[in-house]
Picture: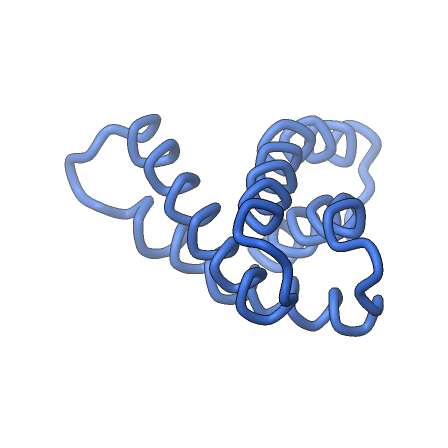
Length: 116
């Protein structure tokens, strides 16, 4: 799976659930802000944090996801003009669902030879 596929899959899963937390925000604004947040944090996690030599993968992923949730929550808080609690809850939920559904979707896509 290419990085572009991984990014689009992760973003698609997150975007699908972010609307639940930012009700009343225009779809265009939500699309732009969430794309910016993901385009900023996703490469930092995948290309930066996960390539620290000698580090164990699971702790890096957990700390990295925590940092991503906090950074995205700050972005949503600033640009979506919602409470920090709602931004944090939205970011945490979207990232958790991406973490859980992403590998399952990747497996399904590979099993059924579905690539884009």
